[in-house]
Image 1 (cartoon, rainbow, N blue to C red):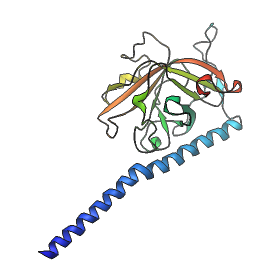
Image 2 (cartoon, helix red, strand yellow; image 1 turned 180 degrees about the horizontal axis):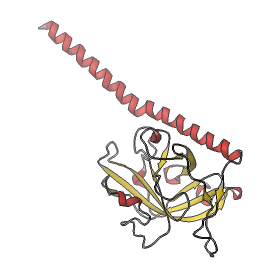
Image 3 (cartoon, rainbow, N blue to C red; image 1 turned 90 degrees about the horizontal axis):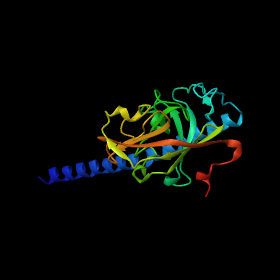
Length: 232
C-alpha cells in the first residue's frame, strides 16, 4: 500500500510538472518566438522599402473623378508581409506586421489579411485577423478599442489612418458577413473604404469572435512624416 501511494504521489508530481511546463510554453515561449518572428517580418519589410521595392498603380474606380484615391498596391504574395499596423490604444510601442492569408502557421508571425477582401486603402473592406492570446498576444487588449480610435497602417509609401466606428461586436465564427464589402451589421449604408479587425472571444477560447469596423479617415505619403495619430 505504501508503495502504491508513493507511486501515485510521484505520478501526480510528474503530471503537475508537465502541466506547469506546458503553461510556461503557452504563456511565455510561444510569445518569445512570435515576437521574434514579427520583428523579423517588420525588418524584412523595412529592408524592402529602403530598396524601393514597393510597386504601385492607380485605383481604376477613382480614375477620372475628383475623388482622392490611395495608390493601388500590387497583388499581395501569399504568406508574405506587406504592411505594418499601429494601434495607439494598445501602446505607442505596439506595431505588428500584416501578412497575406490567415492560416494557423501564418498567424504565429503576425496579423493576417483575409485574401478575398479589399487591399489596403482601397474601396471595399480591408479585413485582418489576429490572435487574442498566445503567439505574442497581438490583440490581447482588443476589448479596449473605442469609437474614433485610430488604426494606422503603412505599406512603405503611404500612411493610412482608419478611425474605429464601434465598440467590439461579439458574434459567432460562422458569421462571415462581418468581412463583406459593406458589412451588414456595421452601420455603413453604402460602399466605402473600410477596415475590419477580428479576434477570438473569450480571451482564452474561440467559441465566439470580436469584431471592430473602421473607415479610412486620411492618407499621407511617408515622406511627410508620421501621421498625427502616431505623434506623442
